[in-house]
Image (cartoon, rainbow, N blue to C red; front, side, top):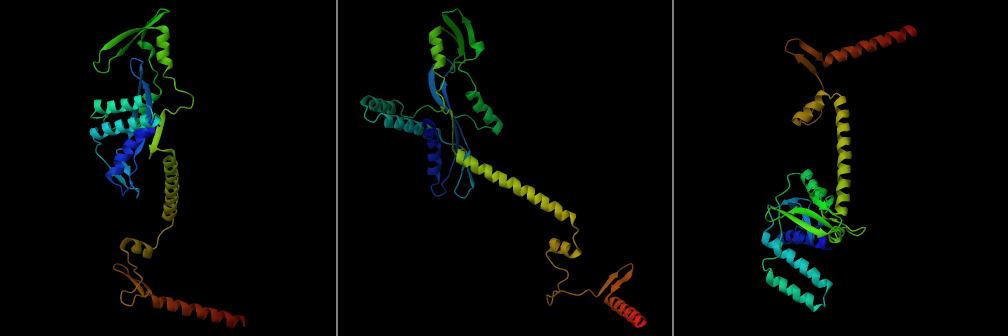
Length: 287
C-alpha cells in the first residue's frame, strides 16, 4: 500500500499538469528496510519515467519535478495513510499534527540524477534487491558473546565501529527478513502488469508485421518490373496513357538514334498477312 502511495505522488503531478490529456507515468518502487548500521530504517527507492504517455499514445517529456512538490506530497500521502489506519486514535492524530508543524517543508526526499540507460536502472534495482543487510567483510570479530562490525557513516563518510551482543546483532538481521509472498517491488502506471502485457502484444505484432513486410519486399525484388511499372513508381505518371484523351495508347513504332526504326506496327500487319497466306496454302494442299 505504501508503494502505491508513492506512485500516486508522481501520477497526481502529471494529472495536474494536463487533465485533458490523461497523462500516465511509469513508476517502479523497491522497499528497503535497513540502513548501514542495521537499524530498522524503512524507505522506498523509486524509478520514474522522464515523461508520461497521454490518451493519444503520444509521449510528453518533462525536465524535472520540483523538490518542494515531492517533499510536501510525500508527507501528505504518508500521513493520510497513517490517519486512515488509526482514525480514532488521538495519540496518532496528535503525532500527525505535530509532524506537520515540525516538518513544514515536507518530509525528506533524495532525488538522484537521471539514469543513462536501462542497464543502469536494472543495476540500481538489483543492488537493493539482492543486497544483504550486511556484507561478510564488514564483520570484524565474533567471540561467542558479541559481534564487532563496522559501517560507513552516510553523512560524514567516516568509518564507525560497533560491538553488539550476539542476540541483538541477530535481531537486527532477522527483522529485515520479509514475510513470505511480501512484494518488495511494485510496478505502476506504464510499468504495471496490464501495461506490460499490452506492450508485449504490440511488440509481437510489430515483429510479425516487420517480418511479413520484409518477405513481401523480397518477393517484389525477385519479380522484374516492366518499363511501365518503373515509370509509374518513379514519376507517378503512366507513359502509356495519352495526355490529351487520357486513353491507353497503342504502340506504333520504336526508333533508335543509332539503329533507326526497330519496330513499326505495319510490320506486325505484314506478319499477320504472311501467316494467313501460309495457313490458306496449307488448307488448299490438304483439301
